Every structure is written in C-alpha cells, then in structure tokens.
Length: 281
Image (tube, rainbow, N blue to C red; front, side, top):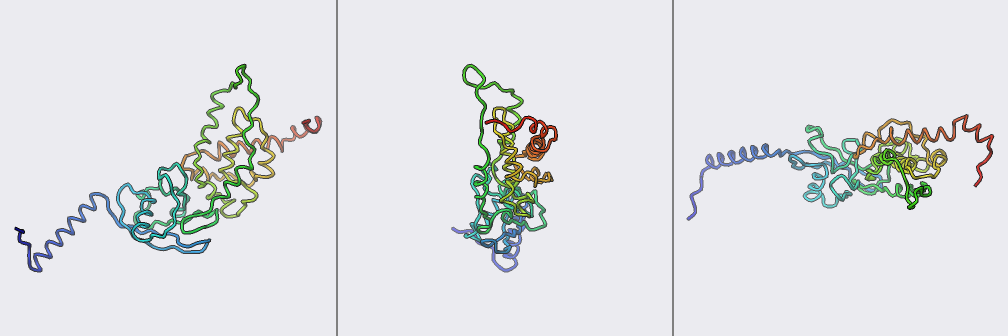
C-alpha cells in the first residue's frame, strides 16, 4: 500500500521549500556553486567570447569545467587535451589573460565573483575555438645542432664526468613542451619574430646541449645570427609561466647570452683570433 501523500497548496509549498533548503545546504556542504565561463568561439583567427554557465564543485580544474560545458551545452567546442595530469602540455590556453595549463588551474585559485575567461594562445595561428597550430615549434627544433659528444676518455669506451656537471642540465629535461613560455614571450606574441627568434623553449633546449658535459658542438654563432638570442631582454615572463618551474631566464638564457658575448664580442678573444688566423679544419 502506498503511503498517503501530503495534499493542499500549503503542505505542498512547505515540502518544496524544505526540499530546496535541504538541497541548498547539501550543495554548500560539498562546495557546489554556479560559475560563468567566457569561452572563445570561432575559427582561423576570427570569433568572439561566448558565455556559458555551469555548476562547479570543490577540486575542479578549468579543464573539468570545459569538458562539462562541452558535454552538456556545446558539443562542437574544440579543445586540445590529453593526459589531464600536467605532463603532456596539450591543454595550454590563456586563462583570465595569463598562459596556463587548463588541467593544472584550479577554479578555487581564480576570483569566485568574476567570469573565468578562456581563450587560445596568441603567439600561434588560431585553428578553432581554443585550439592553435603549434607546428612551427616542431620545425624549429631540427635547426639546432644536435648533440655531439667528444671521444670517449676511458679505456672501456665510456666517459668520465663530474656529477655536478650532470645535474646542471637535468632541470632543462623537465620541459613538457606546453609552449606557454613561447606564448608569453613578447618577441613572438607581440612582434611575431617567428622567422628570426626561436623563443625561450628552444633556448632551453640549446642550453641543455651547450652545457652538457660531453657535448663539443659550437652553437653560439647560430644563436647570435640565426636564432635571435639578442631579441630576448630577460623580462623573466617565460620563467613565471613555466608549469615545471624551470628557471628559464637565469639558468638557460643568461648563460647562453654570456657564451655568445664571450665568443663573439670579447675584444681580447678577437685579438687572439686575429693573431692566430682562421681555424684549420
């Protein structure tokens, strides 16, 4: 037998009010709230922001909210992502005007009373919605002189190196190629010097090779003439956005600049080269 249900407008109204209050209390307990997201929609560099409102809860990151909007309200929203663990570098975007990984940006780190703005990176060609074409970066990398080790110096055909020299370059290996440092760099972002400047990501790559204790290749001439290291005015903006906390400016770019200056602008070295004449091959 079915239990009798409350009847009459007053009883029904009380029940509804009680349920609403209970649901609100439950939502507050688990951190539910409704937030607005302004997402860039469009293709090939053209478009505008579109507002979406969705329910969020404690622990969500921006990528969670994007997926929720994509599933419930906007199935054709284009967004690039892969690991959702801050290790693939795929979900790079500009969140509230700052280059960030969507999967590593917690909603509770952003102002709760303001819309969350998400737009594609500005330093690369826009494809669609939140997706940009970063293929230029993969054309830059092969231009840098490859790792060239010196001959083995041990009887067993191996090398002997200092642990401190090994540790120096380990920091640079943490790069996940999210290209946030490329996006924030004003030389690429504002001045579009892609043909003249390789950007902080590949200055880090060059530093990893130049500072390797076994490498003997000469890259300072290319850094000066082909890769535009002189364009960098060490604002440290690339260091600030790196999700792997690589000290890009102080540990990679400045030492490379010093090597370029020592090799090509030191008057004493220039005098020695003049006296000795051209190197014999």
